[in-house]
Length: 115
Length: 111
Image (tube, rainbow over the protein chains, first blue to last red):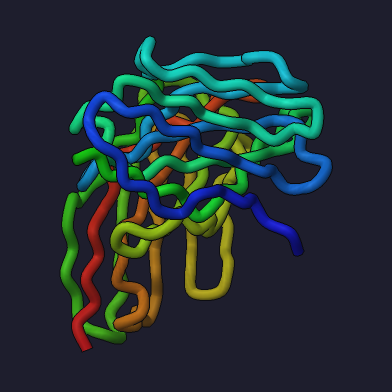
């Protein structure tokens, strides 16, 4: 079965550069979530989209933005990168209309390293 | 905010023993889920238990949920070295809400 796809899997950037992470949800899933997991930390929710509209916002810095496109894939844009942005970035998808059974399926993550 | 807190933070056991990890949360939930993560790798979904369920089994995993105490436990029976990983609980509220993860338990199973 198709899973959530994230690209790239690994990314190395310099401070103050920009980065774009992509997420392709499971086919027919209309909800996408972004999570950030720092070294030794638990995943923290950043932002989510349902039917191409932002649905929830967590601890996402103002330097970051995201959107969901008409094909339901999502991109997380990160600007003015800081050392502290080095983390694993997970995308998860779910079927938004199954609100009583909110099982989220996670992608393999993108490991971002800021030097 | 609702947040899963897990204990113990780290657990080391011998192969064949059972491992029990606990999770507590603060507010009403819709579902509680357990995930496994090998070091620096992706999150693997283990089991989801709904707020109206009390116990659920999947292979060597047993999850319990006590909504009156706002707590859950994950039991891994007959542990194997390959079970070595971090285990996170995650809760979500009513509706299509994001997951709130606990701090995780690092399990080490020694062969």
